[in-house]
Length: 286
Length: 302
View: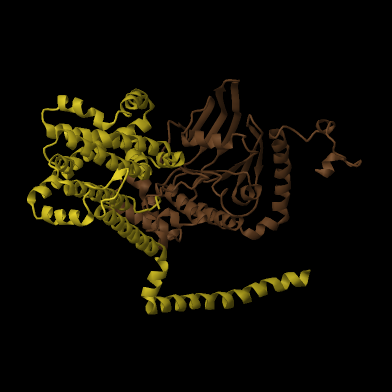
């Protein structure tokens, strides 16, 4: 809520290792990134590259094995309402109504009942959720649940917003609408956002900058600036600029996804099998 | 191609208002019409399943009583002997007599009070203990082995020990009732804690919830469906344990009444006692279910 620029995220040489019976597994190795105050930044990468791990470290759910993670220069000691998080799974409390869900963070910080009711009502009004404020979450659609989730995370006035594939479980149409709602909200609030996704279109449409992560052990492979003007319109997804960015990101991620899957399909592996390729290249058959 | 693209938006805009508006108006008119004219018919149609269930249940009960009447009236003997078994008519006559006698009411009241004390005490200890054991592994590791050894001991087997432990009979009976309901409630609360969705816990912590708030706002409500399963099972076992304890060491209570009837050769009172126990057990489990509905208005259990 303060006018001063805040919400600077700095990740320096972030590493995450864990022990298994087979030895030490390196999930993330030397990842560094920055989100400037008020910036919308996405992380894309193949599945299992550790993008969610990075987000969980920022939320305060795990401590890095190496490197530093700071918000406004302060280290992270544990989860806090300063750093709002939205999960892929719907995480509304089923036993609370929509308004009680939104009030939760305020209740935790000791805001009086009447004050939190007032603030929650205002926010729900802005998000167009007033008709549903007394509904229990099980009566809401997936898109609506995530909208309430975003409003709930914003209610406490966090410095940064962390989103972990928040629209991954939604259908394509709802997903587009939610992206539009999120950019509109962000544009008004000017809060720093770190958004994890595997959807390239989503990343381009929403972000100022995009970090591409490598396959495990994850590190930053590339940083791409999205020069599209704001406010973003759905029609922009057909512009040549957008498509150019898309093509570039696609090839970057394809390389990593193939690495994550264990490399290109090998012709040798199929030698012993009785598959008749009829002289064609396997790549064209597959 | 270009022509098609140009005409497309027009078609869309033209179709939208005409298609939408009447549809909304139609459904409104239709539903309000139905509500006004055929309210009873509608209710009957929507509750057809429940009504059939209730009707069949009543018929089955009637058949049961009729068969009982026939078997006892004819003093049937085919390995099982109905010669001394009271008929439903006998039992009804005794019931009318008993309900006019304040002593019978005292028996019922004593049993209910023991259930209330034992069961409430068990819930008050087992639920918080289960929540804490679910949250803190070390507590679980310490308490769980003790539970696993004592749990298989039926509450009835505790009767002699209870009589030694407690100064009065009343206290030992309440203790037996407590033991009977304690373990089902504890085990189910633990089960509830094990199934709490971790993402809800993480969401709460991200919104600034501390340990105490987590229990109050997340762990407890998330475990409530299983806790109520535990309470329902616990209530059943509480009655089983109570009746056994009363038969052995009571001076009052519906279990004592039933056993005393046998000693005094008041055969009709045996059946009366049994039916009373059944009705009381049914009533208390209905009460728990009602409490569950009130405690969980969000209705994920249904």
